[in-house]
Length: 494
Image (cartoon, rainbow, N blue to C red; front, side, top):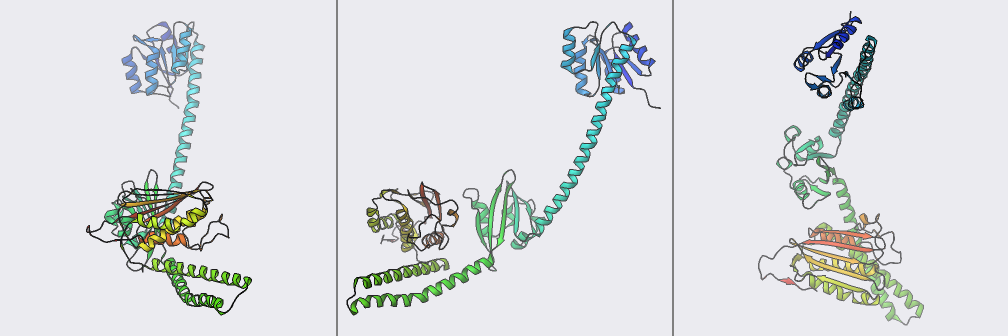
């Protein structure tokens, strides 16, 4: 037999209290009577009433204040207020506090029973809903936990079996995850490495350089060279709210293919120079062998121009091959201002023919660079020459140079047509020409590749910023190495 529900009556001793007690017991409810706030607190501590019926004034306290305090402790407890008189303030306070209702004289037994039963029915429905929501939410959380665990296991399986190196660091550069491929590559133990600072675990200088440079000078891509000849391409990716990820792919085979291709191009280019020199020499002898008509001289001139163009292309290929192979080891202290002025002097014919405005801002004196002056001349000839070539008549070319933090920063800007965004990642590739460049425009597509190789060999950086119709700016940053003595020779501009 189910236990009867307990109705707690917190009312002053009066005939109304006795009426309520008698009416509720008559329909099999159990009642408890609190005569003051102390007994009310004791009953609530010792039992769990199904409903509280409290007077508008009880034990010298406001019944609404008592209700508010109890609802904070027992949010699902249904509470009815008994008042001696029905007033607008009574109804307003009922809604303000969130009580189930109220009772006022004159009262009949049926009124008391109906108010209590309605409140209990609502409480039961609310309780059923809460129990259902708890079960549903618990089941949902359990299901989510199972799904999360399965996802975690799948992610862990992928993470552990992927052939690329993957390492996750927190914001303090401590290792959160490291996969087996990374452990094999750098000779570390995953269990011992977990949670430790990455710089205490990884001793490889290239990877350490990548990590330490990311704060002040972020590098997205970085080559990692291993003693056994393997080469990895590492990427550093910041992860907001977590830290960063370092991934690395083995590109040893790509480097080998590039070496084979470079050797092939170098060999073929070298072997072509001799016959081309002979062709050019014989074209000059043809004119000495006898008089030529106008068409013959025109054809001969076209042959000579074509041979010179091919010879120039071959020279560019050979230069590029020497630079990439590391054979270009000449270094001396040179002044960039002198080379820059010499380049501008050599390009004066093109500048005047197009009526260009050349604006220079050189923060003289610039510190000397330890470099090959011939290669620096190639860099300036190509970058400034391109700016002049692609700027329309009466346009403007700006050249800025200044030193900062042991670096020389050179900027060459033009008012040309700009470079399409899809072309910009490839402009330093060999033989690449922009999609908006006319086929009639002279060029081998090797100039900027040579420039980048020279800048890289100087441990410098080069990048481009461009917008269609607004021109292009090339930025070159070259490190400065101060001479060991004041008497160190400085090469001339030429």
